[in-house]
Image 1 (cartoon, one colour):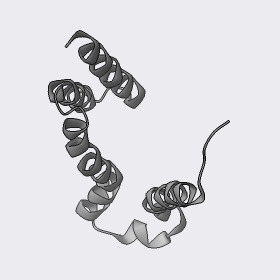
Image 2 (cartoon, helix red, strand yellow):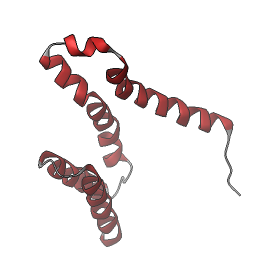
Image 3 (cartoon, helix red, strand yellow):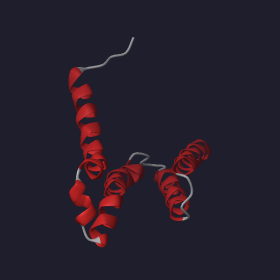
Length: 105
């Protein structure tokens, strides 16, 4: 039914483990309580910053002739995230806007 190859599974698992490690470290290390406030704030946003650096360039490159659709989705997600709305609302809005623009353009 599905054509799943082993290297792809290994890549997905390695990526998910690499993403989970920075998220789990604060829960298992008591030294985090002794870290200065600025470093603690940077550690909180590190996974989000890493995902942003990975996702943003490909959102424009992926829809090559219709790059405005990907950029619009990123802008909507940024605005809703900046307003501190729920992350699911931000992601769904971004996907819906991108989908609509890809079908209109």
